[in-house]
Length: 120
Image (cartoon, rainbow, N blue to C red; front, side, top):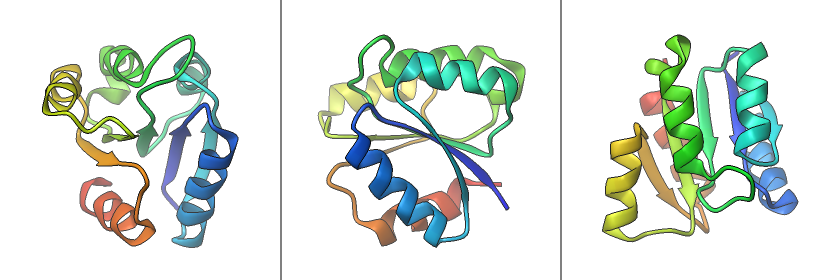
């Protein structure tokens, strides 16, 4: 069963995302921000990272950059799930190493569809 790290500072968003992913057969580990996620990524391997952009302590782009420095996370898909939708922000995401970009509010079916496409 693939393990997904979900990162969002909103408890309600973490619950909605977890509910969707668990219902689709994934195991989920939640993190409250980029620092929490990076710490969890040091002790556990994940098959995919799904992160918000705007969070305290470390945002999604910062997390993506730090994860891409880690040998295991060079090839792990990292999806941004955020309210940010500007082309400039998406370009910054690609430059940081993000695999894909989804805009909130998210469609659960579309989220699962994208994850199935990128997860190994």
